[in-house]
Length: 273
Image (spheres, rainbow, N blue to C red):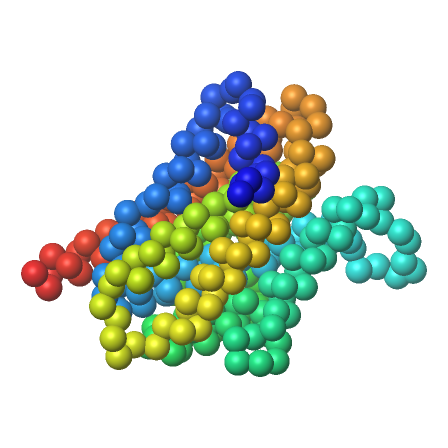
């Protein structure tokens, strides 16, 4: 079966140092040791307590793209790019109001927090953050007040800087830093969970979340994201350059986040040894 086209395939055709850096970073993200170290429930909880922040800021990045391609304005006017508007609206529909594993509808973020509750992971910090933002507190103040894991806080700040950047930078960070690498990351996580002894734990909703993204992102969203990336980011040399720089920043931020989680897992293993 032919693998769906990805934005990364388009980058691989560019003979530039930035393109080579993106290919290398994407491979590193997908094969990071953090996944192989998911060997106990403590490891899974630590992973979730860091990763949930990326689940949250994913939506801010996605909604910033939607606001440019399919803005909610009145009086309404037709989109200048219906294909891109359809793509981003489709992703928002699934991410913001998917069919939940136990019925009804919920955002993937809410489903992830429920998975954390079931697994016994700490959700106080991320709930404090989202509650503060809902009250109108600036995200910088809400983030500092929630006291997330340090690496997660740095990751969120990097994402929110991209949210305020140009549309090509946002699209590059989204397609190359999120949509393209997520299926590979989650396949690695599922493979490790299948080998680990997690008896007595409740990871059903967590597994649903991982499997859902593997199926949808890899098979359906990848080619759509590739077309959006090509149309938005590969238009002229200057736009290509800033777009690839944004993708490099996004991927480096992800590597740093995984490095921090892996170090925590290593430290725990040594202390328990």
